[in-house]
Length: 234
Figure 1 (cartoon, rainbow, N blue to C red):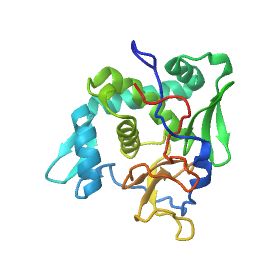
Figure 2: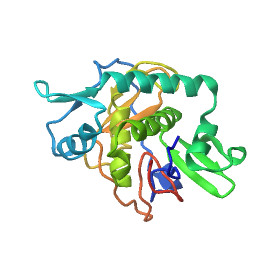
Figure 3: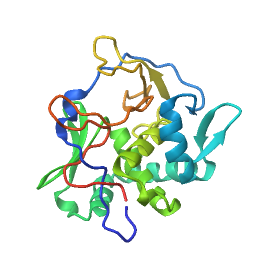
């Protein structure tokens, strides 16, 4: 998945993500065409300043929203379909990380979707759908956007998470993307968030607004993607 530099993943994160998961209230209501609203501090700071310079979103000033740029959207969905249908996600991840594909394993660990090798954890995602989305988006961003490799790890994390909210179908099962709110009993965030997930298989893609990384009680840095040995998707 990389170009000429040794490919690495979003970093400074760990397997502790399993302890910060939140239950999602069931919802099968389809949402309108996916957009990101830009009328909050979060979206100004993280969407305007990170996504727009990458030339992968279309700015809709009249609606104060972003949508995926058409050619990027087509390329991303096509790449997702190829990787999902071929069943070669572990091989693509191994290529990106420059590790032996024979020792890379991906699958569910508790409520998370994780990638491991003989040396331990490679990464953790909220679902297989989120894993496939990031795995296929990152190389497109490397090839398409000169500024991508210059972003800090947390900025790349924010960009990938935000892009997941703009997908039109689930990377895991091609189901319709829906939105719901976390159950009151399980939401740990101080900010009211909406869960973007698949209405068919229930896979969580992201939560909006996308909060910046914060320390958990055990000292680990929770995120949608975790890695103990690598620092960025570039």
